[in-house]
Length: 294
Image 1 (cartoon, rainbow, N blue to C red):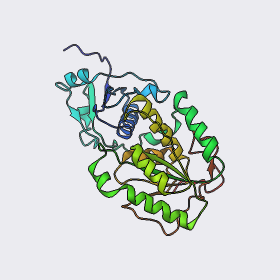
Image 2: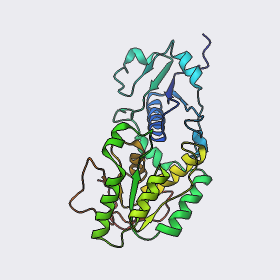
Image 3: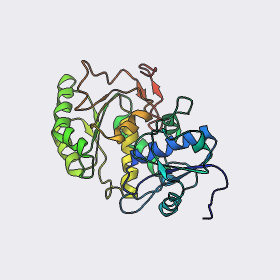
């Protein structure tokens, strides 16, 4: 078989039905490992009806891709390995190609660069950055608010749907508002009808509407707008077992408290303790509050 690789290479494989959170953490985690191991890096990023945009249509990033067909052909000679890195030994380092196929975070060694830091530094394309700033400037700038992420779509993981119903979010938001009548919420929900229900039930909510067909390029871009606005909040309400809300945590520098139906509520939610964001495209940078990470 004639290989298109002349130097040691690591390929990150994403499935066609993989969502945004899984894709980002797999690609960036694998790239960090490739840099540590001195390997070229490529990634599989399938697009189509189940996921519309390429990665450069979302963030200003560069790097070569590999088609699913090429990766699967290579797998006859270089089988897929997983995120545990239990397979990484001296013999494996002699192989020309590694292919990591997983939907989980890569278990990077301590000496590898954290992929979360690279994620924080990535800049969204203008089609995403503009609406982030527009919504933030018109509705959210200048005071802390609570970010609310709800996953209600039928394709969401069963564990998420079982533990994190819409009713829980409405109830918890109402409790927070009873404690502070001025609290504001930014709501991100993947089902328009569920989002409308939340906005009708709880005062003080801000949300995007008209996001486009699920997982189309327009919808994924709108989801990333939501992601940055969630990250610019001071406190997060989110679903159990969803990678999307964890991306918001990482964009915020992993300093925000995430409350889910499984974790339960802290004694005193402190959504004003982390200061306020000036540029919502860089939500890890804050003015006032505690600047240290937990």
